[in-house]
Length: 125
Image (cartoon, rainbow, N blue to C red; front, side, top):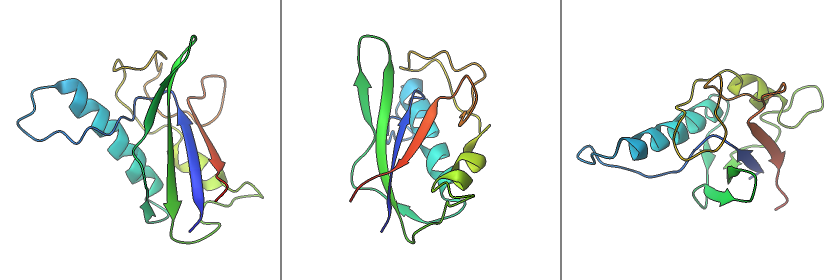
């Protein structure tokens, strides 16, 4: 199964809150994660071994996450192994003002341009 790696400044923490959880931040974080999974899932069924990891350095906060697809080259477009994925996810709304340091203006996944907030690579297996 091909593996892809994501780095994003959008809070995609997987929290799995239940309906009785009063913490709206946890619900919003899970919503961003669900949105990302559904966007990716428009072209392929995916699986993952680990949940997204939040990384904080001196300048910013970002999340890293890896997922696998059921078949190779599912996102291939014009010799870019993630070209279709970049097109599919660009402009999808996200919830801002969570634990991210990026103001996310506008509040969307931006896969290109000067306000890019999500990057994709094919990961080495």
